[in-house]
Figure 1: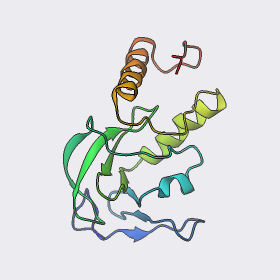
Figure 2: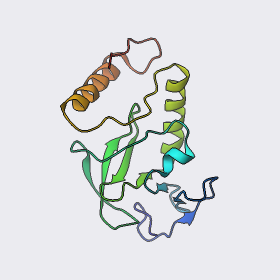
Figure 3: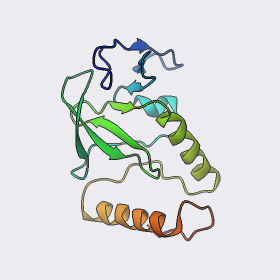
Figure 4: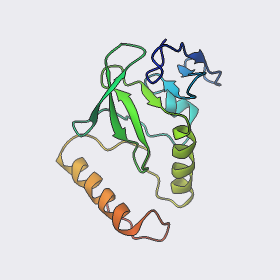
Length: 150
């Protein structure tokens, strides 16, 4: 498969414990491709049910699996911008993004603030995302800030 970022680079299989997991790593840029749902089998604090929503931004990147456009979205409860396929639900993480997601979400788990499931579509989910973004920008990402009720 071709790397979404480098385009011409062929990605290499990355060994993981789950034999059904599709994880590829680009040897040139260091990015990772996770097939649909694979991140949850690799990262204990990963979001389940992550989907491309209407709020996602268009990109020039192409899915290495189905060759459809990738969309950019903020990984839930982080500031990490990831790219995801709206068709096959594959997820592209640039070099360093996997580590950042793991660190932030592990901290949230340790402080009892981790949300396992992705916010769904609809007005309620959009409102919750807006509230989270507003609180993050107003208070920063500190452990002692007030949590919004859900």
